[in-house]
Every structure is written in C-alpha cells, then in structure tokens.
Image (cartoon, rainbow, N blue to C red):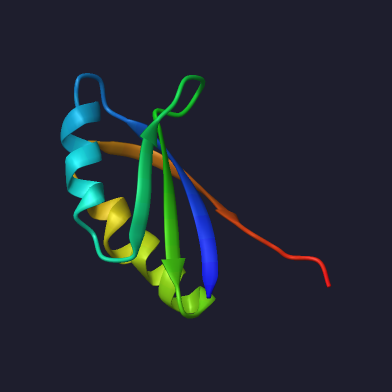
Length: 78
C-alpha cells in the first residue's frame, strides 16, 4: 500500500468547497485545513504508486478551485 500527502493551495473563498469535493474522491482517506503557504493537506492511500499519482493528476487536480498542489510520496526505511 502506498501513501501520498498532497499539499493544496485553493483559490480565495473556495476552501470549504474544495475540501468537500476532495473528501468524496476514492482513496482520499483524510483532508485537513492547514496554515502556511498551502490551505489543505490530503492523505491518499492506493495499492500502487502509479494509482496514487493517477488520482492526484486526473481527479484531485481537476477539482474546481484548486490553484496548485505539491505531492509528497512517503518512503519507508528497511
């Protein structure tokens, strides 16, 4: 199982709407509003990294009101 965190910057006054829409996307397991240069942090779980990245590119980034994103892929030590 792969885990990604997505930092999301939203358009002004669109935070709640974006948050609701992103929460409805399959494989999104958590969405939290945060302070700083980004507005949301999104936790995504998928069977494979390609599936997780596909969710980011083809589903989340197409949500109206999103200005930009930064993807963080988790790594685990052996």
